[in-house]
Length: 124
Image (cartoon, rainbow, N blue to C red; front, side):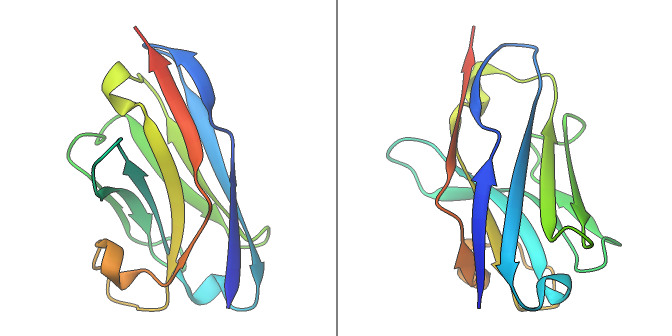
């Protein structure tokens, strides 16, 4: 069991940057594949970025490649999402998630634990 708490959301102008953090409590953080998803109003959650347990593999959704960077610090049980060159269409609730699976299948159903979400709003 792991609990996830996201911080770092807020309001930013287009072209700006934000860094989201996700702090994990509980055992086994280093064994989890971690991911970020986002949810637009009235829509399903969609994959944003993922990182394997030891940080060796990183994966990104097409719409954020080159702008967002996922990283993790296993000594702090924390995963980060650095978001640069933000656009109004990045406005969403961002969720941190943990998967017990080792295979990097970046879909909602493969993630076992979720944070409560943090709102990111990008103004034009």
